[in-house]
Image (cartoon, rainbow, N blue to C red; front, top):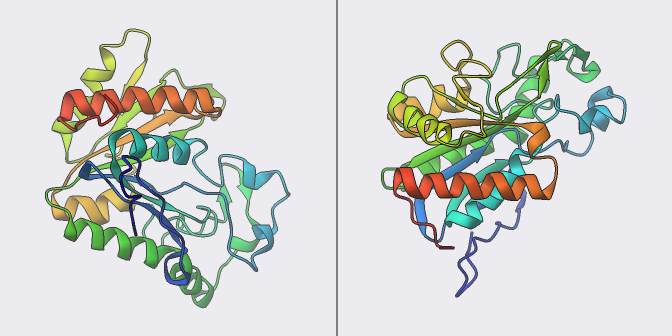
Length: 262
């Protein structure tokens, strides 16, 4: 993993056979700020042939958090932060769910049946975990052990409509144990009267905790926030730039992370 000499922009690590499951960006300024994107990609490893889905399905939200990876990469650039992003679709195996649970390799996602995930044998589940899940979480654990008092930001995106009901929130901050940092970010977002910011919305982390927070961050008692941006706001480059810029300013102002661009 490397950084361009003389550059303030972090460089994406070139994938190697042993770490193809993730994309890593090295921090140049705020090295203890780690951005995570558990649902960054809709790609599948060779040999899984779309999981039996029709061609348009992998482009939809069931396969990934649309726009989240682009915001994560841009925010890492703006703040000189480290970032870790998954390379494979949540439909192959969800890196933000505990292994062995129904949502780890979902048979149905938002009403869409995933043929290749039906009654997956233990050997197949273990193979998928070895390809995508374990390498990502090993790298996450390695980084958390190396960083000095890390602050972790889990980046996600959500659909503008769920179960036929429109979601009014432009952005949501989810929380479980680290209430203080979540409240700080929610209050900062709320100062922008053009925004509708959700407090443990569009869903509560108290009721549906993700494995990355519950399994990796909370046991270490690490500072963290979980951010959900509405997908229709970050489908294009202008939206990605605007949200990354907004979050960079908030993290610089509220949490003391220096903005190397300013």
